[in-house]
Picture 1 (cartoon, one colour):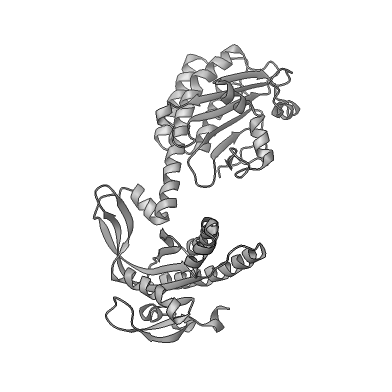
Picture 2 (picture 1 turned 90 degrees about the vertical axis):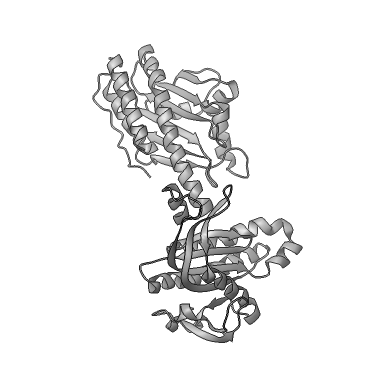
Length: 423
């Protein structure tokens, strides 16, 4: 979140309109800030502070944009509001009752911006205390707070340049100046806000790309791709603790309750992925009900300790989730986890048209085989001999015997969590 901005009335030359030099200076600052990658909150606060200093009587401002995000519909930035209001706020979906509350939907549909979208307007100017149609309920709050004039602007993108719901920049501008905005003030806003919108769009796109990369590729893989590691076949050899898990009885659930597949997967993935991330792990793949993750650290002991801690936490959270779902008479399951440690190749693998940023190598295959063996030996967690031999691991584990793993040259001793140390 951005910094909290104190609401105070600055000493400015409110009676003076921004001159050509002021407008050029503000536009130049926006171009420089946009190119340098300033965040949305820094852009809005920097713009407002400079505009007010130049004589534009802005008391409050809001700038927001719909985006492409798996959870949120968009992002809003405030300036000049009370410290109790967050400067940056992610807002939920307003398109349907399944995504937002009825109150949120009603508030949006009663807003000036919804009216503008319905009528095709790009700008709306109103005296806050003015009683005319359409009447916007939010104006009562603005009037009570001493605001006098309101301007809303929508800067639209060309249809071919929209991304998901990201098709325009919304902004609103309020003043508490008794005389309100003059024609010169309005003209100045109309000239400089498009440049602010362009810089805001650039910042939103950069943030959106980062979020999507990390969401679909994993946190570390997403950052590596964005840093330029995109050439096919470029990999590095790393040492990692490897996690492979899947859900118990998933095929049975899909056959008996197919409509529950996606909600079930989402619920269990939420708690398992959160446990992995909490210990610094990186989830590389969601393969149906399976999860492939890695833990890296300065040495094997730290990586394995993190993987083991994530396993213990994930199991607790899965059990708690199953209890909640059982109360709601929803299908429940448990998970199998296989843990191993070894060297893997980490990087870009695939065709010229479709690449994947993942890990490959014998250690990855062995982890998969260990996880699959969990069903045969009826153990929710199985750990390789190599993992168990890492410093500090044996004290948390007990042996379950030696087993031959498909595709692995020699039988090896497998271990599971010691109940006395993990409960």
